[in-house]
Structure formats: C-alpha cells, structure tokens
Length: 530
Image (tube, rainbow, N blue to C red; front, side):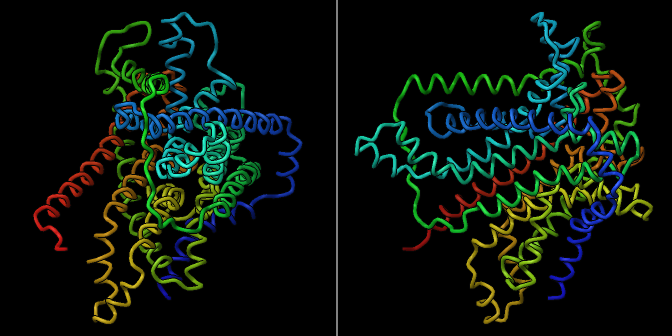
C-alpha cells in the first residue's frame, strides 16, 4: 500500500501538479485580453480549419494504405511499412523544414519543375501535418484491420450480398469504435503541434504558435496559460472518448485470416498508391541528404562535409550529447516507473490502484506544449530549473501513458493466479517479478525503451520552454538554423536524429528477432511431449 501511495505522489508531481498550477496562474485580465484579441480569434479559426482538413486527408491516406497492406496480395509489404514509419523518427519541425527545402523559395523541386506557388500558409501547414500524422494513423488502423475476422465476409459472399453492402454492414461497424478514437487522436496531435506551423505557417498563425510567441517572445505567462487551457480542451475530449469508447472485453475466439484472391486491378492500384506515398515520404529525407552534403544550395552544389563541421562548431555535438543523455535517462527511469506502476494496477488491484491507473492515463490528455508551459510555472526558481533533470522529468510526464498501457496490457494477459501459487510455494513477490514477469514482458520492455528514447529525441514541444543554452536538446537547433538561413546545418541535425532513431529501432528489432529464432531452436531441440 505504501509504495502505491509513493507512486501516486510521484505521478501527481510529474503530471497533475503542473496542470493545476497553470489553472491557478490564470487571472481575469489575461482571459479578457485573450478573448478580445482579434489575433486569438483568427488563430483559433486557423487551427480548427487546418487541423480538420489535415485530419480528413490523413485518415483517408491511412485507411487506403492499411487496406493495401492487409487486403491485397502486393509484395514488399514489410519494406513499405518500414519506410512509412520513418516520418515518426524525426521531429515535427523537420517535416516543415523538409517542405521548405523541397518547395520553398529556392526549393529543390520548385526550381527543378519551375513551380509557381508558395508553400507558406495554410496549405503548407496542412501538408506538413499530414506528413507527420499519417504514419501514426496508419499504424493504428493497420493494427485494427490486422485482427478483423474474415468469417462474416465469407458468409455474406455465400448469401450473395454485394460488396458495397458488406462495406456498410460489416466493415464500417467493425471500424466505427476504433476510428472514433483515431479521429480525435489525430486531430489532437495536429491541432496542438507548433513545429510545422512555426516553420511553414508564415502569416497563418495557429494557437500553439501563438502560445509559443507569448511565452518565448514576450514572457507573458498569464496569456500563455489561457492558450494552454484552450489547447487542453481537444486533448481532454480525445482522452474521454478514448476511455469511454475502448472495448472492455478480450476476444477469446480464433480469428480466421482473409484468403486473398487474385485481382490484378486491385493489386496494381495498391502498388501505385503505396509507391506514391513511399516516394513522398522519402523525398524530405532525400532533400536532407542533398542539403547536408552540399556547400550552399542552390548557388554551389559541390559535395562537402563542411556542414557537419559547421554544425559541430555551433555546439551541435554538445546538444546532440544532451539529447542522448536525456533520452537514455528517460528510457531507463520511464521503463522502471511504468513497469512498477503497471504491476501495481494490473496485478495488485485495489481502490488505490484505480486512482494510480487514472493518473497514469492522464498524461495522454496533456499536449507537450501545454505541459512544458506548466512546468515553467511550477518549477521556475527551483534547484532543478534550467538543468537536464527538468527536461528528463517533463519527457517522462509527456510520454508516460503509452509505455504504461503497453506494460499494463502485457501483465493482464499473464495468468492471474501466479502470485497465489508463488505465495503457496513460499516464493516472494520480488522473485516472481524477476524470474517470471520480467522474462515474460521482455518484448514489451524493449518496445517501451524504444518509445521513450525515440520520442525524447524528436520532441520540441515539451522542452522548448525549459531548455537553456547549456541543456538544449539537438532537436531545438532545427528552428535556430532555419531562422539563420542555415538549412544545410538543419538538415545535418535532422539526419543525425533520424540515424540514431533508426539505429534504436533496428537494434530492438534484431534483439526481438534473435529471441524469436532462439525460441524456435529450443522448441525443435526439446519438443513438447504429447
């Protein structure tokens, strides 16, 4: 009981206390100033319109991609899925910068194709938002479609029900609940991001950018707090809908996989669509590579490594080390805290466990930019303010929910009577955790490490208000270099972050594959007696 209370206190300080402090900081004058500001009303409208359009486009692309992967017979699905994940491994601000490199005033494609349009403004914000949001939406929809049972479709086929009726009567009801949660989740990701609008928004200002300008530019924490509370609203709605809409039961039946028939038109369309999306995803990364090793685009296209040296001379190496340190500590502490919390809520159920579970889920409802501002209000003037420690804390709070849910789901699937059996045999709970639960959860722990590390490397929202010149993560250098018109150095930073994150993902994949192959070898070496 005591250690559960200790966990509640820790999570309360990390997650709940900063938000409460932000609410307390709001005063009447700040609310009146914000509500009477024409800039606020314009930013609110811009945020809603751009986020809504980007969400519609994102989900449309993600649905078609998931259908291509799960319902067609195309080859190279694994390679396509890997490429589609790459946008998740770079900061959102890099997507905006990628658009600038490709379609800016001296953009690679703009000069090559002699295009006559500007990427800056609403459509640039929408394009950048779609580029970073659709991989997340694709993974969620793909995961839902992967476990759909084919039996209802086979029965409908036997009964002569046309495909359009199957879509309306079987597919849409099956996808309805997950899609509701995904729609609100994607909308929240987009509407609370300031990386893309900051880079390509131009005069098209959104609420997160307004919050950033109020706090960073004018140090107006009162008005910033009002913007922060407003940005909490869509996130809280998404959180409530996700909790209410989540399926409670666990399926116990065996899912019958789809037997895909030959269909040349369907497969050709899938090849073309997947190829087009893969090309679009790869273009910014290609552009980063082009600029990172070019003397001065477009004036001098000579290959060089000077941009790497120039980045290092501007403290790039120091800030990169900061990011590695932050990501490493967040991964280690986060995994330990998430495992202990999940074990307390999944395997030691009580009234206290319910409160702990609720607090653990709450961080999912807090946008990073809001969390960063609230940490400023709580910890400003304290001993940890301006240190690496506060950046580790804010990242722990920001990314805690997803790894916690991973471990919680993993532990609930393990036989619930194991502790009782261990107690009967005189085996302590710690020994059970060490010898049973940790080995059983190894794959989940690896995914948790990967999640904490990668997101800590790419985040800019939660840390932008808290970083100093000595503790700055390398991701924040992208905006600095873009403002100084040093796109070559910004491209170097983006590629460095991508390289490290690909290395982490690849390492996790290889470890898991080694364990899988090893288990197959052991199964063949020591077959089970029947």
